[in-house]
Image 1 (cartoon, one colour):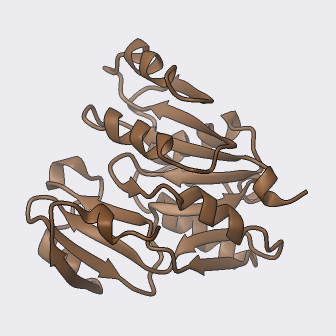
Image 2 (cartoon, one colour; image 1 turned 60 degrees about the horizontal axis):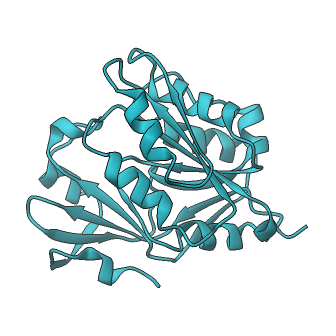
Length: 225
């Protein structure tokens, strides 16, 4: 059976109060229809009912609440266990995923030798500066899609940072094949430091291979269609 006829499970974890709109917008705009989202609420003070009411407006969304003490790695592993499809996708709660993000990833996985799909090139958007940057030949932990069998052998580590990068590295060490698509359909969004687990300053961040593109209030017009 073609991989395009199979589904994909989006694993989405959050401990932020201001990202509900972004989470459901990212999922809702995806043109790939055979999908589900496993939403893990990782904060003791979340109103689970409020999230479930919003989730009811979207197809195949399941909501689970866990104690705030859970690490991101634990949340991701729970999301994997609760999901049902053989292809998994990790979404970050405060980034932007273009409408064809899942579709292009699933097309890449039609090659049965490919186990992981990441973005070779992706954008960085600095909200306070309204500045768009591009990173080429990279591999960002906020955007990857993989086959379920990998998670059966390699769980996410029990920590809040670098759990995604270490997961990918462990899989590659096992011989998994990675494909880097050139689609520009993912935007890494940076707000102030308080809203991110990785507490690196903006100027330090852009020194890690980012090239300035333009100042804009609407980065979506620069994405692949």
